[in-house]
Length: 139
Image (cartoon, rainbow, N blue to C red; front, side):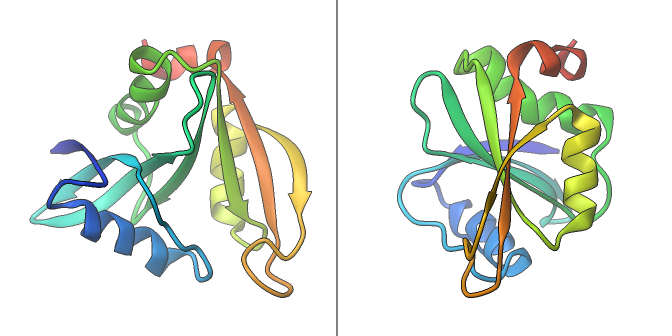
């Protein structure tokens, strides 16, 4: 089952913890929106959105398994069909080769290297996905 929520609902602390446990150095503060796939009360996959500015929103992706078609539809519907963003920005831990492979397969394009982003010698990479490239995942 998929859940959509925001930083002020009762499930938000669990979503926040899910991401912070997966990415050492990631600290989530302020408001955010999320979508999460749950099974028996456990988060299997989630997207966390923050820093929305009407054209762009930052996305964080994490999963215990894989992102299936229904998962991708849920993840990309909010930013592109509800918020009407022109692009998504993903910041990925540079050593997380699994997520880098996933964002590349999804059509994200690398824009920059972010040195020491998650702490000393813990770099990140910045990726962009334009709305026209996400269309295939939503329809």
